[in-house]
Image 1 (cartoon, rainbow, N blue to C red):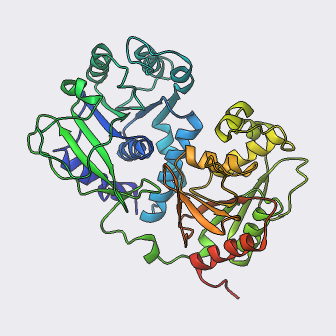
Image 2 (cartoon, helix red, strand yellow; image 1 turned 90 degrees about the vertical axis):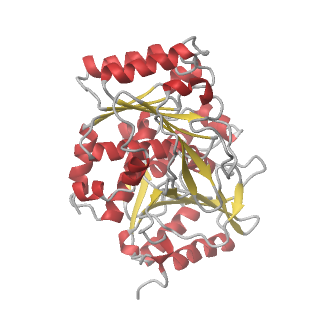
Image 3 (cartoon, rainbow, N blue to C red; image 1 turned 180 degrees about the horizontal axis):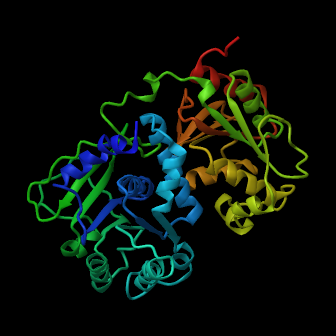
Length: 444
């Protein structure tokens, strides 16, 4: 299938049709939800759909670093290319990247106090970024995406400035925002009524879409559609784990044939759980990528070795302070800790879902250096499954808590398998059973 066909058949056409033709240039649209539901993946899907239509997208994030945003685009594009059997995906991806520019204002929004114009989403920084894109990078966007805009502290002046930006730049301006949770069953209300804190800015917002989490899916609810009094029901659902738009005509993963030769294990190749993941990958005939570094003494696997140089390692150079804070413990006791954390970053970045064998602690983190991989998966909202060797059970991170997942399966073609060096028989059996459930008996 070629790009035009993929775009014409995209579920986003349903989204656009439900909004009577879409957002339109000069207007502001908002994707909103409570924390942890998946606003970033949804707004990336909207941007990716525009890129497939040869539109230029400027993406500004207040919540993620540039590499993290790029990972969202890469993951969603990969899934789209696989499911639609896109012709020449590498060439298409390169072309899309030429039409996209990503900036991160995360450090400013976290370090600085709320400003008078935009709260933690400083309008001065936003306008400065747009000006830099146009004047220095010579990048004139058709669509501007601002992820995690701070409506809670924003003033009417700030939102008015956004509206002016949309009109004067002649762009569609999409924002994602945190709002209060809404009831699952819509109550009778005036069309266009919005949840806090968006209700203060109703007049400036053209389209507002709410992400409603349910048991098996996340549904899109149209809360405002320009001046329409008749809000159309959106017939679009999202996978609650991957936040991909689900087309009604696409069968669930369990109904699709799985050929292990199409899959790639991404790991570190260390002794223990990672070596067992690698052994299973080899047994089932799938590719294996093991990120490592010079002098790593715990390396056990020899297939698919990728030795990261200094420049590549620096891409995953999260500070030990940040890692220790998220894990609620000091990581300096782990040998060669910086290089280990850097390689884990590459493993999780390049995987679409993550499987871990280890121990879940009372604070919901995973014990040891493996815990950093689990934290990255949670941070980037990637499907995360942990086999707890103490409880002898698989658990899935729901976005807010660990839930029992009795029989997880591998569903994406690039998945991470990581875990403890102290692998026991139960953990070894859990890894083998995971492959068996996912792909059946190994060939031969």
